[in-house]
Amino acid sequence: MAPLPISEILVGVYLGLIAALFPSFIAFSIGFGFKYFTNVTVPGLGVVALGGTLAGVTGGLMGLIDPQLASGWAGITAILVILMGCLWAHSQGDKLGAATPRRLTLKSLRESQLSAELAERVDSYGQIRIRPTGDIHDIEGYPPLPENLREQLRTSSWKFPADLSLTELETRLEERLTTDHELAEVAVVVDKRAS
Image (cartoon, rainbow, N blue to C red; front, side, top):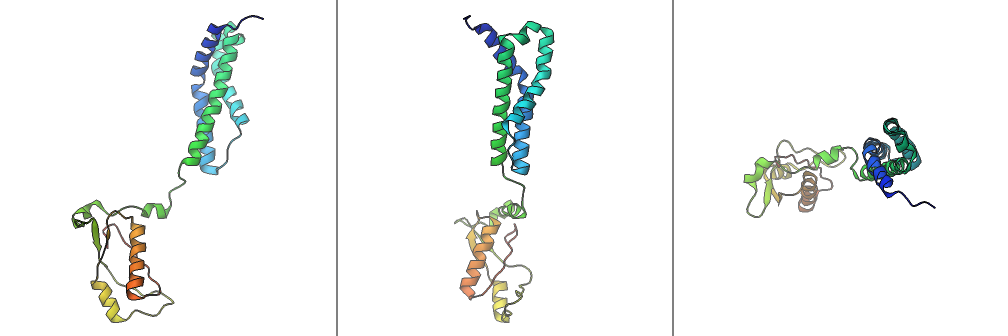
């Protein structure tokens, strides 16, 4: 049994790494795209076949330059490195596609913080005062608010931590109003100007 030609194998690894760049990029893109948009994992065999096909162009060019290269240990090693690179890139793309948050939703857009220009309104305890603006409307299906309570709410203000998201501010203000005024239902919208 003849010993393994280490120098040819090293040349094959080198050539395989160079030739695997483009097929691995395509395999990564396919893995990421399918997982992100459809939540489906492309089978590894399909990615290996595609990677081998794409690498065949590069390998064919190498074979034209040196026909002995394609049929020896260097060619076999290069093909194995390319196929393993495609499998690895596909699995990384698949993982990234699964870990990347899906599309933006209206709720995630509203999860923003208060406007930066409100920094001067934050007190020394890190709290901001929220005041109502506009009309206070009745909620359909519930009794109308008494006029004195409506006037009291118009002139009131509430303090909350300034680092809360808008959604958290709305939730806390709704809870406070429900508790303080014994209201059955409250719906609040807080904008970035804390009003």
